[in-house]
Amino acid sequence: MIFYLWKNKIYIHPMELKDLRSISIWKKEKLELNISVDCVLLTVRDKKLKVLLNMPFPEVGYFLPGGFIMTDEDADAAAIRILHQRTGLDHIYLKQFRAFSDPGRFSYPTLFRNIGWEKHLMEELHTLSERMISIGYFALVNAELIQPTGGDFQESTTWGDIEHLPELNFDHELIITEAVDALRRELYFRPVLYNLLPEKFTMPELQNLYEIILGKPLDRGSFQRKMLRWDVFERLEERRSGVAHKRPFLYRFNKEKYTTALQKGIHFAI
Amino acid sequence: MIFYLWKNKIYIHPMELKDLRSISIWKKEKLELNISVDCVLLTVRDKKLKVLLNMPFPEVGYFLPGGFIMTDEDADAAAIRILHQRTGLDHIYLKQFRAFSDPGRFSYPTLFRNIGWEKHLMEELHTLSERMISIGYFALVNAELIQPTGGDFQESTTWGDIEHLPELNFDHELIITEAVDALRRELYFRPVLYNLLPEKFTMPELQNLYEIILGKPLDRGSFQRKMLRWDVFERLEERRSGVAHKRPFLYRFNKEKYTTALQKGIHFAI
DNA sequence: CTTCAATGTGGCAAAATGTCACAATGATTT
DNA sequence: AAATCATTGTGACATTTTGCCACATTGAAG
Image (spheres, chains in turn red, cyan, yellow, purple):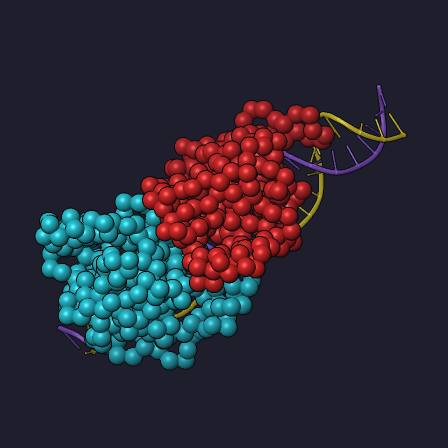
């Protein structure tokens, strides 16, 4: 577990409770102890939208991956760092969507009660009930790229179904629902869903993603027409092979076309 | 000027530098001294989009209205409080749009240098160079409702033209441009522009607002058709009188119609 | 009384969308 | 090897929306 020591007080970020073997002492000068970042990492699996969750202790409910901001980095850098620590991923489209600042959203006594610490210890730690504000980020990640690699990724990690979230600590359920809202909004300005797909993908695969994330079925013909009219995907010569039935064309996201589309002021409404 | 005293250090929020007559001592327990709120209050005047700015000292550049968050309020409450303090306005559509967390965005030494304090005093205050993160809010306000009332509203306050901003301190120019972007995005989800108009308004008045904020001319016929198709404005029997030429119809925002439109998932794309 | 500019409205072509049918395709089954 | 079958590409067609513009209306200003 990583403690942060400052002015004879101990600070612990909830996401770091899982590693009981190491105790590191940090100086206050390195961290902003009342500003943290929480990452809502979304993916699509089994035809459902899922979010990456951690349970550092058994039966204490899940947490979003998060951590303190270091004094020499901004929130974006902290989110990128945390995303990398938790998943090994880099160069992911990561977007800040809201700050969560309810005075009661977090307190150390609540945390320690949740993880079942002794009562007398809790009372001793009561002085720690400082406020923590969290800045929320969301990202779309390809689950296949995380699952097998490991790294910091442990058994206490799971993909939670957005529609049926497990028990979450603090306001993390709120953070998740706000992240999903923000993602759906973002889709009108940036067609970021290709982040969930391999470099080359088919139109039905892309449509499937949109349907899952928007939560409604879409017409095949209209969808294809619309995507092609945006003129940000380029059709390749190849077709996906090894599949039954008619082989679909492969497409690729074209960054140059995308930037020119943005300059034209195109909107990516579905 | 209001100083915040804590652990033998002095904290000053830049927006409170203007009032030199009173010195209040606050306890740390009442305030989050490294989390502040900045409000981008936008209005339309002289056919231009403008932002409310303050200059607490002569020739030090302008600041956005802002302040610390109190320990028992969340950021929304702080923004509402600050908006009220600066303008006397209540019940304004106020929206959080981003947190600004660049480590170098703010420091007390920079502040004191900007306002021309003595060098030896600055060095003494160097220990104050703590980081401040700011949460940005924007609101649309009716300039007529503020200008005459006064209150905290003083001569050091001005409406800055978005296209030609005066010199601003810290990253406040960035905050403003981000706020305008956020407003333009928000228009696709909520037709909030009626906040800038009296309760009863005409279609050309509304169109004029859209044109100024989006920065491009719109066709009269198409605009009218689109607004009416949204079915959130109701046409009244009256027409605006006292104007030259044909008298335009008056419309009113209908909150019930609006909520049903939202439930239908309507988008307010222009 | 005339002028003039702003407004309400409708026409028309072009573009976009919803709906659906049909052909093509290739693994799977028989 | 042939038939089956679900998936994909594509185009037809009606409907809706949009862009563009002209025309009539209106009421203050000249």
